Amino acid sequence: MYFMIHRVLVVVVGVLLLIAGITDIRKRQVSRRFLILLTLVCIVAVLVRGSFAVMDAAGGMAIGLCVIGISMISREQIGRGDGIVIAVIGLVLGFRRCLAAVSVASLVMCAAAIVVLLFKKGNRRTQLAFLPALFVGYVLCGAGG
Image (cartoon, rainbow, N blue to C red; front, top):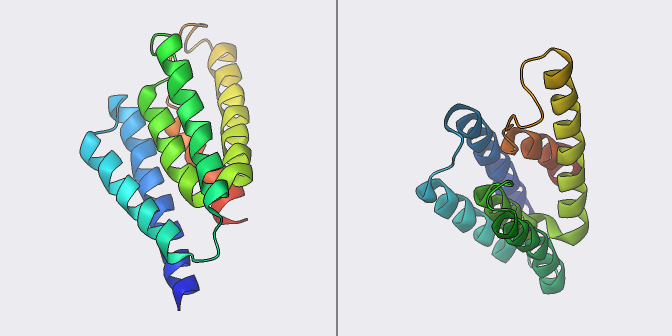
């Protein structure tokens, strides 16, 4: 029973990430209300899954906290909201799957940047939305694994 509830919550997190990605493309920001909702769903998902190691959840969250730190150091070259989303989904994914999802998202962003540059739709200073790529990484590495 708890396994089914956990799987449903993992799907809900994926849907919320999809919505966040669309919002990130359109508005270049994600609202605090949305981040609170995503946080609550992720916390419930962790609590429902009883066999989940606390250290694994902390490791997944640490990846997002590192991104938040990099965001502060780089003066928001990397969005702080992206780091918050990574930290929150890191709770559900754990360290290894969160790291894999962020790695896949980074590869997707590299490919997107190459396409933007090749078709001359931007330059090296063009900012791209990261949350759609994070959704792809979540689906490939997080929800499926």
